[in-house]
Length: 286
Image 1 (cartoon, rainbow, N blue to C red):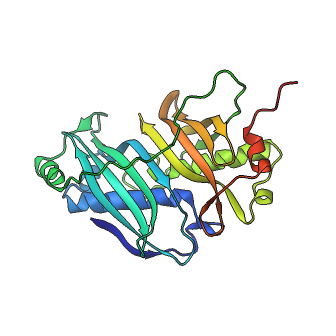
Image 2: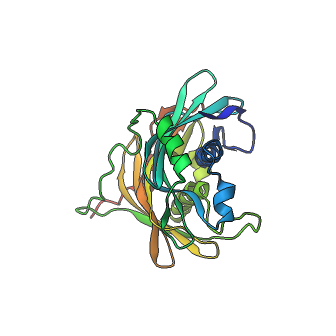
Image 3: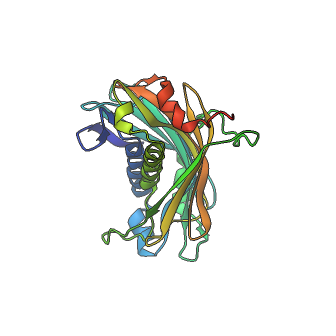
């Protein structure tokens, strides 16, 4: 189903000449709410029962091109798997001309106040099952390998207080905030290495989210402090690949692999320059 139709991109959604990578997560969240309404198991209904609606369990995606200001995007969502308490949705983001920009897939569950997965209402589960599409997009990191333990890997971390906006029914950090925190952690890492992001940005736009696969194990509560820790798995001309761990109150909330690419001002992939890669490469041993 079409969840976002003919959305023209405007100032406020951008970081420089390209849409902000976290904005993709905004579109996914908006689309999930549209789907929830269409299948008569809305966010409002779940929040009224103090549940956590459509919480992500595993989320993965890939961005092939970043849209630029003035372009028009649309989002199509279909269910690709349904369980007793879960539904996996496939999200396709494209331009109004049909060019594919990004694909994502998220396994969702609704969580009861006691923390257990809540069974889908029978009518909703049946409706999802009837709408399932045979689709299996291969999205996410191309090489989700572990950190190379034989070498000296670059690691960095940043912490963020999670503040309540006082206007929402939920008491949790929002899905679309996590990539923003990860971006800030990269910027702080650059500064710690005496590298300024503005000095690197020009015709090339480095450190743009390109692919991810994150597993969500616990919600992040308002009032807590979230630590975003990253180990560099690899850094080459095409990709900076990070092993991410997002944790609070002594437990890991989210873990996964994230790939960052470099894009030109038209939004197409290009290569990193060596100064862009230097902060992510260990200094050679003497």
